Image (tube, rainbow, N blue to C red):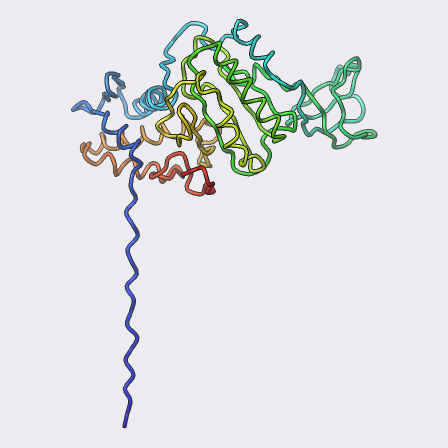
Length: 338
């Protein structure tokens, strides 16, 4: 008797699940309306106009950033980025440490046309002269030129306009994807207390970090009033930092593009977009521009009903997870990030 073997049945491959837009982004798009000629976009009660698509994208990106991310209309307020000693002074006093370590390379011999006293080191690609009278603390005992580590003042009030920035006493963020924590600040006095509590927690944990806080009263309130940057060596600190935030001193809002961890506290990953012109921007600006491009694409298409499709495309091109815009397409998964 001949046995006829049956050919194996092909197992159908299930289709990829459709990409779903994050509910918060769906709510953002629900607030958008376009003028018939495509030169004007309304976000709720705010209107954005421009005479050409590129300018409309830029202006719409700014409006999305202010309305849905920062929660502050910056506009053309005079002196908005000027230093504010009334707030900056208490912020400086609240920093629990004085110095931070940085990698440096000591140079040997005279440097430049006008050599002066003191050693010269390259720090972050910039040559700086180390004063003889009060040199930064050297970690280790280098002899002559070569790589070393310097301890420099941690406070950098001029690095990021409108913010007071510090690096941790164990150093800055370190390697790996950067995680951002955002804290909603509404009041200058309360901001100082929140700043003190957050930095105190980070220092007690002994992790490397960078943090900045709004240092002008004209820039409050804002949902990203205090930002903490954490590298891979410090991701585990997030729950403790969230717990350390004094609830009575912060607002309750968070960015529509970030992941809420507690009232007024959210997290997001640093953008990972290497396209020309897209590096170096902030998280909020990066997300806002991608959404603005999708909206303007829908306007050019003449069909606002397809705005979700266009926004999905632009988010994907920008390396953003459309279903969770706080994540990049390649962001790691953390226990508290869902």
